[in-house]
Image 1: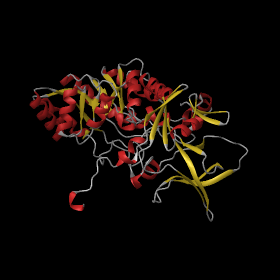
Image 2: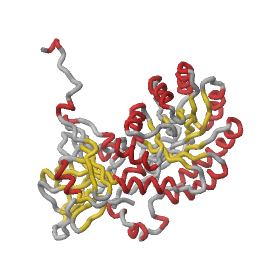
Image 3: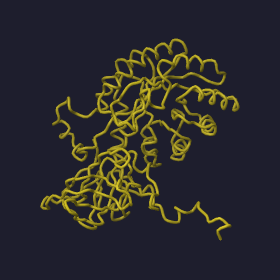
Image 4: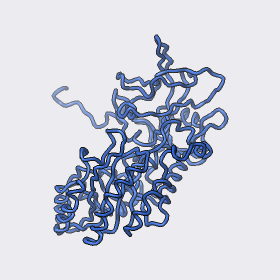
Length: 434
């Protein structure tokens, strides 16, 4: 569910007319709904009411300081995959004491910073990483709390570029080797074994892969609890979100018209399926959602530059580009494209929605039907709150886009659009070229 809907003819985020945001801050600009983020957090945190659950938001999905602060205020902890993400949590004024550090390539510097910050646990991806964490902790005279990320070899049937739980992926230690890895960890003097973790991928739209993973993980977790006294199990994130007909997924009435068997996976269905097995373990449960917290809470606003009518093909050329939102080019992903001003008297147009970058992959939608729009009018790319701004680049020397947060009728720019001067600030011409 989300808080984007038409009020009259104009698309609103909560109580804010998005055309007003576009006129004030320009385009391309990301806009996030604080109410949607809060709703998503509340539903996920409450999905297993009888259990001791802690939500650790996966910062990689959207690392804007205001988004992090909002989630911290709601009670969320964090899952970060780099020291930079951890520093962003700290810069936002949030705590990392109950947060976890994931990632396959942690450097000594990152490990040291995380230990000094007092994180809850490292999620260890390999036995060499165990040795490195022990070494760094020893130099600091500390003990490092760890969980091993177990790769259960479960196919989540998601996009090949975002699956993480099969034996072909770089993530985690294979289930068959996990007991030996824990045995090795128990012998390191500067390691404390705290839990067990698994994460099988992203944008998973059915509960089966989660149930299969927990079925494989639970016996090992029970064994580790008895042998090493682990206190928690982390089952990662990965709940999928609605991308097609995303605008329609706002009102609850629309949701209720879909037969239950065909509805997208919800936090409630997810929790009901996993809570019984988790409850038997008697462990704290960590959830690490990212996309499901912020994807449908954000849109990318863009301005139409040209309507180019070709031979058998129309092109709607906008000022946003693949450098601003790379998901369609990188993952062939679908984003609904809607006008900020809806006019039912206009005829429909079928066109490719494309950006100005000199790449054929700079395309947001192919042969998409939309109301006819012209130069200077605004569009919104829906469900752009996750893996949007965080993956933005400066390709074609384009500036990083702005970000705006909405709460009720209030809105504020939380990231200013990058200037050209900022873009080249760290570059210089060497003396031998002068």
